[in-house]
Image 1 (spheres, rainbow, N blue to C red):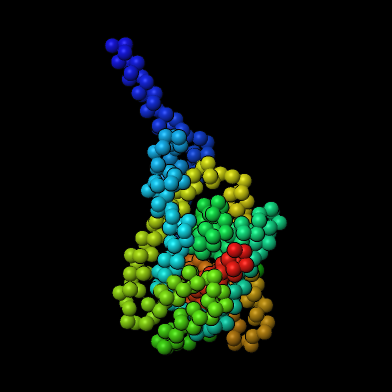
Image 2: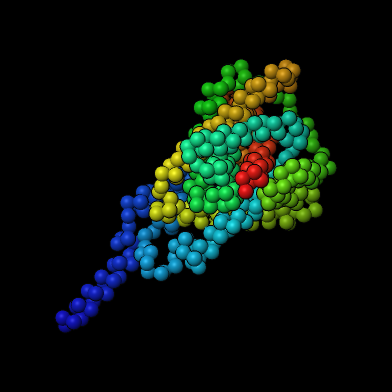
Length: 386
């Protein structure tokens, strides 16, 4: 009987060493609370639930404690594990182009085509990327790390993942979570900046209705867009090529099934895999570092700079426009590529000051320009830093 009890005790002791309770650290608990916070924001506040729920649950998965020496092959950083195999879509950079394919297939560029000068707002908002890049250099990050961190200012998660996978793989988890976090917090971050930088008279500026865009223009746009941007920045081809290809599938009118697949089941599947694995990559031992804190601070700063740059650019641009052609500065925030949330914020703030002034269609111009602009900026950084 005594031998049996000893045998049972030894086995229970061995079993205990494999449990999460025995291997949990303060870091694991902190990250689990962060994951729960993401899920709360998604469910209770409806902040980007399509992103925050996969990422939040991924954080929970990635921070289940286990014995690292047991050779269980369940962790995302253990070669050969299922999570590690799925994570290769992030580390190899092939999830983001597939996301861009879906974005292109669901995006209407009519607002931008009808008023091409709105492209300049999307370009101006990218100053947040290069501003954060310079600040990151001053904070001690090397040029490649600074470039990967700066792209957070474009408010484009897939672009941030793509660039960081090339320039700073060791920082990719923090950069990706930071980028998606600030995308989700667009309704919180942008309105105060927009109100601070505009006057009451500027907020009620009425813009001319967008002109009707022909089918021919819609078909030509992705072809011309691809040739112009990729001849200028060939290193942006994986993102820009897929973005414009997806848009051609949508606008050609003869590949509806392909467009529906790209904008529906495909992008949904990739979003699930990308969000879950990015969340799981925040394993406490890899994620809770001083660099991660710096990255989150720089991400917030770059997002603020990008929003302010777009609004200020419109105010300056208006000096050179005739009275009837002026642009409402409230759409300047939409130059970041958080589609379509930042455009919706332009609409919401505009309606606060004039309940009949609908800015959404106008804001979609710089918003989709921001998608193109962030991909171009990523291509420029990749070309110069690789």
